[in-house]
Length: 383
Image (cartoon, rainbow, N blue to C red; front, side):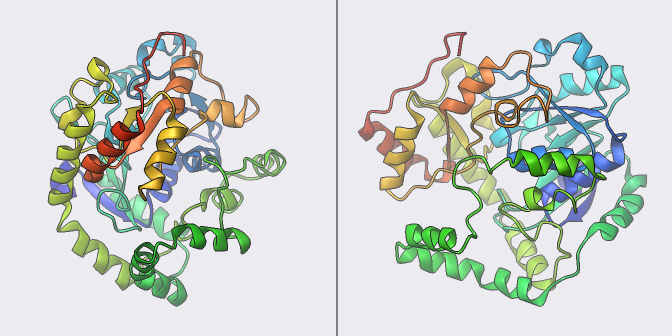
């Protein structure tokens, strides 16, 4: 990854952990961070855990990228950092954000979890920020790990020490569970027991999401914010969907990750080819997505009029839809916990209509949506 980005890289056990590490290093306590409201709620809680105030940015309706021109001047002046999302692998306007951060003297931090292989302005995503964080659970498929890339290589040692202080010890039980997980998941899928497995998890209290967003638990969150910042106080939110997010990796995780990384270029080619096919459909967004087809999108956010009906149609063909981020974070959390977007309608529209499609299953998804009569969503300027 150092060779791909031309930057010093530090292995971390998860993207969310790497992002926390970056925010704590580059941002002053109590600082305000501009971020996308169409984002994983876990990232929202990581920002809070770092002792920072999320500020929700306006978005462009057709791709969910940050719209810098609609951020008020007063909001720019009060920021301590900008956090990109590069949602689904579609780049935010990183060159423009970099220039604005330089003028303000604040750091740009890139959350590039979905964006290994994406390019903007002739440079790889992750090559613009003071720091950028990538996930090895997405394109690589390792279901663990990530890395923090930094513009200043002299910071690597300091960040490695900070990382090691925050890690929890390797656990044999967790390593064994990781080792058998791929075989267990394959068996569940092969026997068509996915619904039964999820029902069992709910019965045991292990299903942490009954809806797209995790429960906010406003009372508990106020109590956490009244205490000292840190991962410990926000652990119950930050761990959702990945309880080993700060676990020191064992040999099993590292060896599997190394093996899977050797196939990264082939995976990126498959994502790029599937993205082109999906974007060239009635649900692809048309001119609003110009240029997106050259990116190896992790998911292609097709725009459908009735997203829930489309999700149901895909589920009947055993195609699971994940990585939904609806409602936007300012609607989800409210003004007590975040500064809302000054122009919320485009983000709300995108969150309501975006259908994240796996480009590796492009042909199947196109057939299902065509057969179901799914209609494309069209932005009318009002949301």
